Length: 172
Image (tube, rainbow, N blue to C red; front, side, top):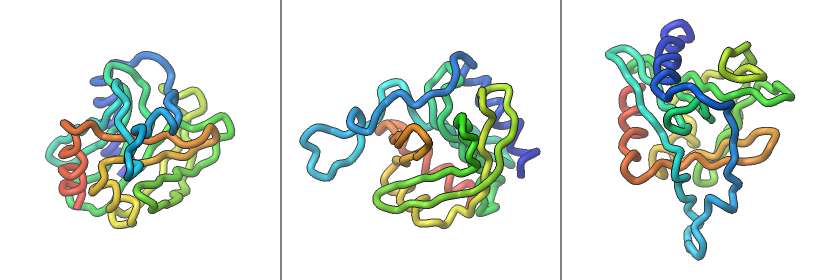
């Protein structure tokens, strides 16, 4: 899937107007609604999930518009039931993408590849669309990404939650 998904990722990166280096600036306590009884995370004002697709492939990208501040990219071929996951690598270059959503967690082991966008390269892993963490993500519209610096919550804004379902419906 890599050769087909890569042009789409590059196109989305261009659409996000490449800028500063990727970072996860928000801390978990900044993302929780004060006094929210269900503890649901809240979106970050300048970050969101963006969907890009063509007839054969789609990518769901979490990041900041008009920058290369991309935290996670999920890509697939239409109806494949398979995902390619990509995140910027940390200085330790561990080839793991550790995700959570609504109490479900999953670690995806992949590889680290060099990148023109990210200083330490990018972690790339593959997965099925069926693990419980992705099913929760479809329902709750947020994913937690764990890395060497801690946990960052990637929460869809209310106006963009349908992008997540459209992405997974496309992927199969």
